Length: 125
Figure 1 (cartoon, rainbow, N blue to C red):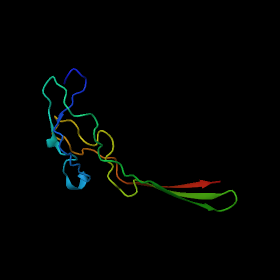
Figure 2: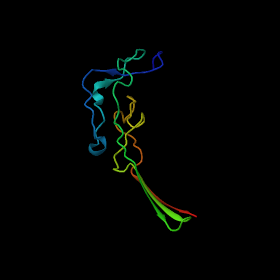
Figure 3: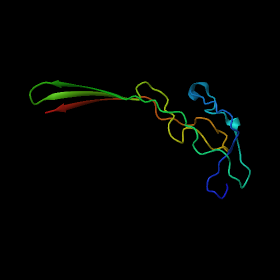
Figure 4: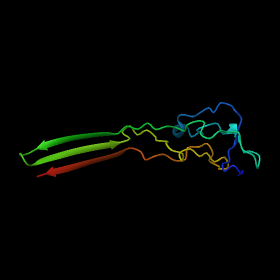
C-alpha cells in the first residue's frame, strides 16, 4: 500500500484480450500477465477502471390473463420469468477478482442467480 490511499498494479500496456465467455471455457476474463505488483511505496501505472467487466444481458417477462366468472368475481393468472434466457449475469465489481495478490486474480468468481420462474393466482370477489 502506498500513501496515496489506492494501491494500483503496474500495467504493461499490452492488449487485455478480454474473454467474453469465461463461464464456458474456464479461462481468465483478462490477460493477467499484463499486470504486475508495483514497487513498494510507489503508485502503479494502471488507471482505475480503464476497462469494463463482463456485462449484463438480462430479459424479464410477465404474462397475465384475467378470467371473469361473474360481474364481481374473477380469477387472475400471472406468470413471471426473470433472466428468461438464462444468460450468466457477470455484473458488478465483485464478479471478476481484481486483487492482484489473490490466487483467483482475473477470474470470474461470482454471478447473479440463474433463471427464476414464478406463477400466481388471484381470486377477486
